[in-house]
Amino acid sequence: MFEIRRLAAAEVAERRAEFVALLREAVESGGCLGFLLPVDEDKLERYWNGVAREMEAGERELLAAIEHGHVVGTMQIAYEKAESVRHRADLQKLMVHTAEQRRGIARALMVDALERMPALGLLMYTITTLHEGPAEALVRSLLFNRYGVMPHYGLTPDGRLHDASLHYISRPVVEE
Image 1 (cartoon, helix red, strand yellow):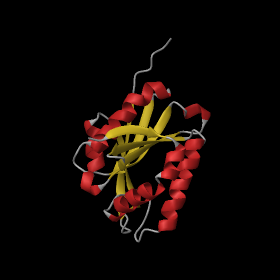
Image 2 (tube, helix red, strand yellow):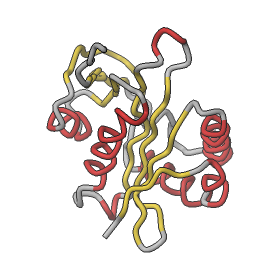
Image 3 (tube, one colour):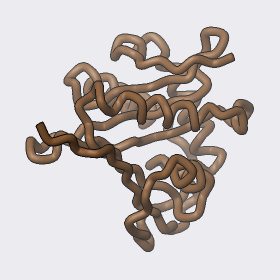
Image 4 (tube, helix red, strand yellow):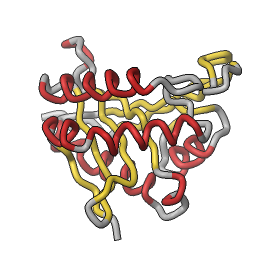
């Protein structure tokens, strides 16, 4: 059985090969994660180096699903940098190894992030998904609200334009 853990920046360096392999597989299997085919290994390395730097700076968290000592899925919580919006964060790069999909790993990563909201001082999460894709079905099942569809938002790994659905979830504000 897998467990969900919040990783430290040093663990990104220690497990870099696992993270690079996971992201490469996700993109090669059609995941819209900001990379195009053919996947450039140097770009993946630079990407994870940047994630570690942002984690060290307190701008990002990395949640990982670990099973038998190996990373089987990840998701990131990216904090807003502007002072006026630090009550919200963006959920990014939700990915699960293809051989491990359909086991509830993505849902467990999302639920863990939702449970962390109060402790992180957050009132809202946003997430962007491929319009009408599997991730959209997941976030909608977790009661995220779709607030729009943006046409031609980005490119799929094979270079086709895709639409994106924009979602948010918020927790009640308690006035003191």
